[in-house]
Length: 329
Image (cartoon, rainbow, N blue to C red; front, side):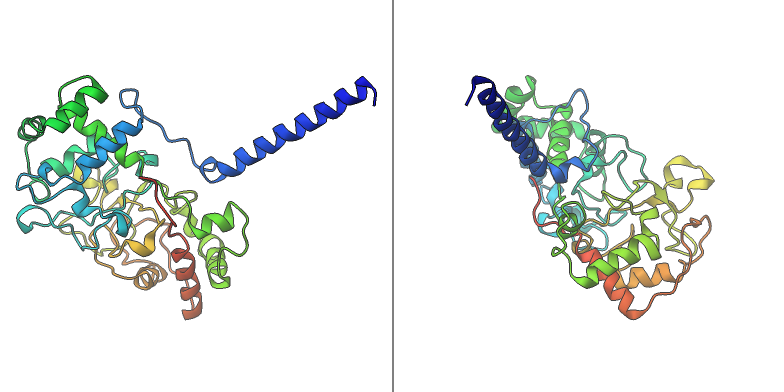
């Protein structure tokens, strides 16, 4: 073989090797490639040490005034970081204003809370801590208490280069929450990895019903099965206690609007809706098939449709296929 031919052969082998490496890398990152790149605040870049510190704080009951409630009390990992309660139980048996949402994939959300009004996870962390029905402690008092914990003070100095304070607390909690990712459901294998065996026939038909016949993706769009927008879904005929986004904006067009929840891991997050008033997926489908309760300011997207008992079961089979096989903590 001439030197010229040998060079061509070696180049071909090298090219194939490079292509193989690229393909392997693409396959490894395929599931993460379909999501928008998670953004991080300039003052809170993600690090493993910060995530670990945030996890300690997340599960620490000393963050509540009675030292009986932690962030994890209302966000249990095995329930997709919800709590199974109609409304979360806080200090002294008090109940929160609303049903606890999942924290999985929360780092991809552009706004937080059911009113969709808080702009960052760092700001959101302050709300349940100071809420008198949830953790009920003043931030100043909490910082003094946690700064006296030797491990926390040392970690604060090591990771942030400063004494433990509200900045350290909120940035650490936010970092941990951004690490809670669930994007490996059977549906992901089917839809993004093209594994036709990942879903049952009923789940596949349920996906077609969801995406095409009933057009549920208008509000629950891929990849997170939510638009993250606030809408009035017709759940309540006349709102009397919780007026939704109107509560913070005082804009009449926001009356009865709540942020559309993600449907990922929805089989694990019952009871449903902002008030925890619905306990089954079957009942939710019935509500929407009836066109909601025609409440004031109800979204025009909520319209009646006919669905058979078998189609309902197919739709539920699809929704169950959105349960992730694992989460990243």
